Image (cartoon, rainbow, N blue to C red; front, side, top):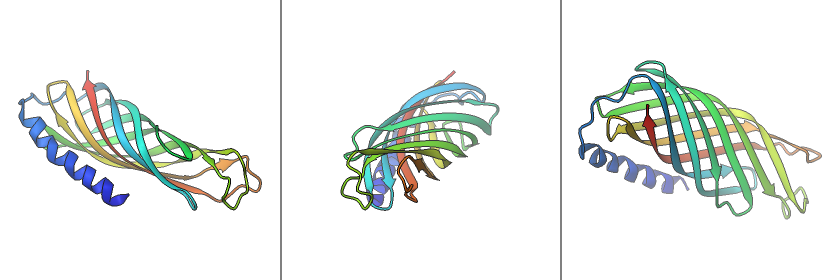
Length: 189
């Protein structure tokens, strides 16, 4: 899975300069609200369950100034086989404006993870789905490219992890690790 993610990231990053050179936008607003959508590749790593799937999501935030903002993100895996998965996070973002077109960003903050897994056949001998929920930490790194004065395309890698609780007795000691590689488009107001 990691090699697939690396290939997708490399393709996305090589496409960004071509998209950004089609127009020469003014520098994107340094503060204000933004909202957008994304498509991603989500990978879930548990003890016995390792799956990846395509996901979709929405994100939005507010830039306080040229280097600091806050962002909320909701992503949902749409074609997992034995698992359903969603993550919700809100985190401060730290932005580095390289030039009028490109900026990098880093974010770290809390995340809420919800997953449900069909555990029959695993060592817990459960014949239906068990739901796991809990709070963890998300961190991510990304690259923004301004297409126009208000449209921005984004390539982003995020990793969320946390120990989740369940109603299964005894509760399995699962640490959920969710990796997401996404492409997004947002409108900067």
